[in-house]
Length: 252
Image (cartoon, rainbow, N blue to C red; front, side, top):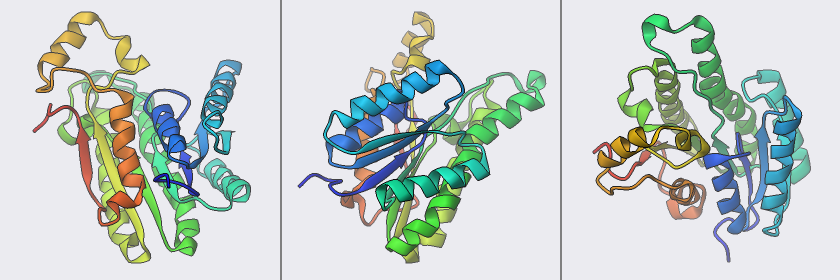
């Protein structure tokens, strides 16, 4: 039997990168997939549909929902629809996130608010909406996607670092509240992972990053997806409130 057979996973921000990798990994292990992404324009809607088809090709049920994860009321409606469409929500992965980098002295209020809302408020929104469902089911696994920047900070990314540090504290607090209800909450903090975002960096910067990693390579989305699979499945049934750094030993 596959590790996630018969379960439903809701993944935010899964049209590309790490979120998409997690959706494909979970589907390959038997989970039905509900995922969200921004549907602000035709390109975004096309990305939603492309990912949906790719996941569905693995033989599971998959529905894409165009949704602004930072919008509280919209999230409530999206989660309600997912429950109606799938019957349950067993796994929640809060992966939606953006960057708007800048040094603190030059950072605008808009840069700060946009990143905090997209990265941290979105996780609150989805956890708040999913918890009553998981409580009625007497169990569930919630995974917050943080970053090593959320653990150690990074110059020029105060807004992003604060949002990702918040993801850790949010997960640990909810883990304490929901442990007696059988709901586990953990965090993954990826390091330098090969995605479209990191591919845009100049080669010199990529080489410098790689030199700092004891394993001497960048991570792949599958490295993060495999960790998410562990946390989503019963393999981690006695693990909650933890932060797993998937960074090749970059921050020991």
